[in-house]
Image 1: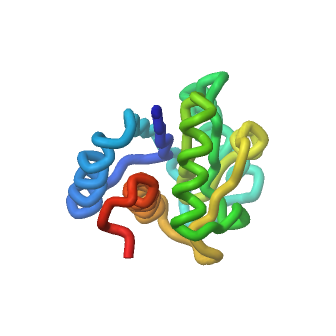
Image 2: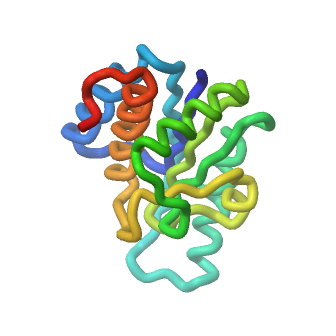
Length: 158
């Protein structure tokens, strides 16, 4: 199974890099994992709404170039579907059977563009709370690992 994670921006803290690298290593037993980072736009704290749209559009175009035409795209979004880890494991199994690359998209500080949301086949939320993209990346990697472990009835999920 091919799993792709598209992210806006790079990890800046070594501890997040280390944690993500650990889960990427663990996931190599279960899937072909690709992590693609696209550059983020500089966005000061207060932006005019038109400037926010421009930032989102520029980041969105970079993300769209990395999405394949056959990819099943899941946008991480606060208004996305929430599911238990067991349901996520079933979702992974269903997507593996479809033989389409499974692509998760994590936006930058302003979220994702309308174009990326329109391309998404599904939206996923980890919580009604907002998380920084680096935490969302780590959560996604961990939940992917947990989902594959659940599918194989291997110890980890408790």
